[in-house]
Amino acid sequence: MNSNLNFNNLNKTPVRTKSWLNVNDVTLKDYKAPEIGNFNNDEITGNDLQGVTIERLNKGNVFPLNKKFIYGVSDEIVKQGELHFNKGYIINIDKNANVEEPILIEFNMDKENSTLVDNILIVAGENSNAKVIIKYNSLDDSEGYHNGVCKIFSKDNSNIQVVKVNLLNKNTMNLDSNLSDVGYNGKVDFVSIDLGGKNSITNYHGDLLEDNSQSTLSSIYLGGDKKVIDMNYVMTHKGRRSKSEITTKGALKGEASKIFRGTLDFKRGTTRSVGVEDEYCMILSPKVRAKALPLLLCEEDDVSGEHAAASGKIDEAKLFYLMSRGLNYNDARRIIIEGAFNPIIDKIDNENIREAILASIKECLDNE
Image (cartoon, rainbow, N blue to C red; front, side):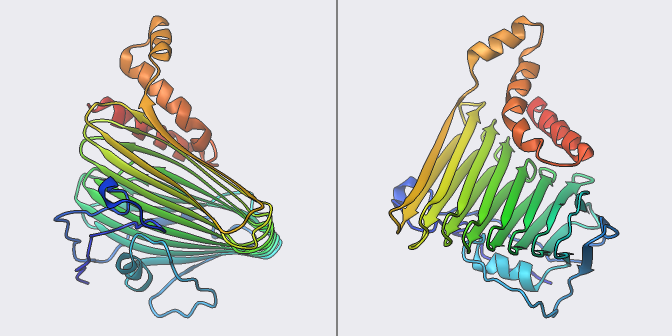
């Protein structure tokens, strides 16, 4: 399948701001997507867990639950993921199921499996509890293309955690659009570990439809060389007493650049709802570019919204203290960065993946 996609004006903000700020969207100049071939290198763990059903999603399948993306990476790129995917899964968590072990899907890209367009649907039944980990990995240094679409349906009183781990190589394009539909007293905990890729454009929309619904997003990012990192996170409050939280930590070195967009959108009628967002970027090089656009949109009086974004260099006093204890500069710097990242990494219920994440962080920081 030939991919003649437009990579201009991706990850648009919910509302436009001053154009000279260059934060309304991102354009990947001169990038052309490759032809999408077959993908045959994925593994699934958890299909035998009680209360879990995992089925392959095939093109043309009729799925009873559907939801249109409003804030995906772009309409065209989302459409590719929804209609022209080469790997898809439906994960169903039964009503009242308490799934203690995490469900794990691993996509391993290599020269023979260099293009991945995945479409994943997750349905958490009423009163259910489960965790899903989706890991993207590169087995070699070949050029690659990844476009992922994930829709999460959290029914009444359900609690679902979805973790996406990007450990792709430096020659792979990463595009990722995610959407959650949260019912009464439901909770979606979305975790994004964004370490790999030549460029990484990611998106999450938490749609808090019903009363007492909750959505949290915790993410880390790390960029080097001339990598472009672009994030667009939106929490839309529609139910009363709904809660949202966005926590993002990152670090940039080399000539990397990032744009963080975080939006808390309180619709009319969302009384006593609470939203919080916080992003912090550690600057490791004078040549990096870090931009942030925290937005608060409000149509209701009786709500609480807090939004903040900041960037800065690593604390010299902390570096001095660690180096005075015998650590070299690189190890001291890495410990400080890992200390900021660890509260988010520790949310992942898989020791091997946590170790792989820490190894990827070390490799990136050691390669100056």
